[in-house]
Image (cartoon, rainbow, N blue to C red; front, side, top):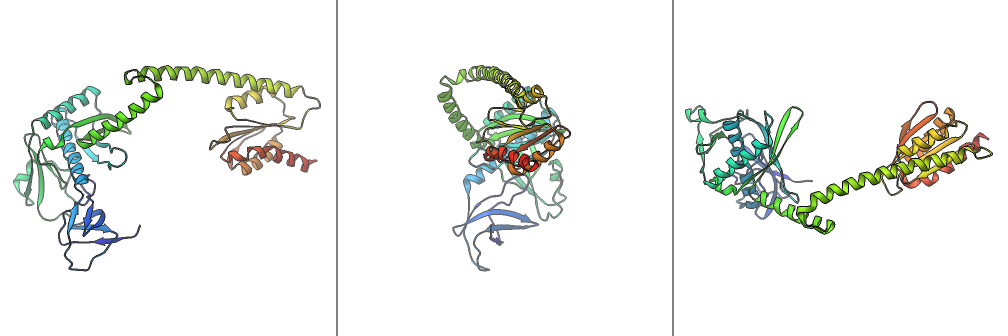
Length: 376
């Protein structure tokens, strides 16, 4: 998307940084799509440009700004409680965008979390919110002793000017450039969703303030739809789904056994045909790998070129298998891969492939027939 990088003498729009998303808003009614920082300069990406020296009016998207403030201050609070009371330090954090789906942010921690600890931390955070603890923003010059109490992962190499320290009274002091609420009561509530261990790190997922309410609204709408589908109350959803899963497993196992029996029966019929056919082509929409393997094992005759395909014609992919004379298997298998837009290969008497051109399965027999006609 084309646009302009615009720099103003001053700005009310926060450039992304410190883990916080960029502000958005308008300048003279024209939308600001993104703000980034280049040293001490805030660069506004817009679809409109302005004459140098023009006087403009900037308006911040306050709904987005306040949401960013809630998530950012909430992260400070959660991290402070985890560090002070559980000796679990924050390594980084990520603020999710909040759009059609509720944005779920996370904090990367240096130690795993137990479920009971998550409940305890959430409770402590919400107690601090209920106490309406003040949040203060203080500025210092580089080298000021007042900065010694503040935690930081290091200032940017290009930082100049004063340094901001965010103080949550009796809870936290943290060097930070982001936007924050002035009182923890503005956070409304914090919900810690779950922790996830992945590749040597622990991610704690969380929601703050309006995102908690939005998430609850989404969950309630989903619950209503589930109630309509399952035709029972929300308290019975889990039991009913578990019963359905058990029934589905039984159905799938029964279907699998029936398909194997069908494959074995079809193979036995083929074995006794006289005269013996040079090839046999079969597509089974409901079939699977077990159907293919059972058919090939039961037939066990390399004098017949067996060509089997499975998969719903309306699906995006299917399976193909050939068995028989090694030269025929390889040659015909490659031709069918071209036709069906598939990839595969094999050795000896077996060729296997996966393909995507499901609508062309009806042409498989023509390709096989043409190959044998050329041989004759």
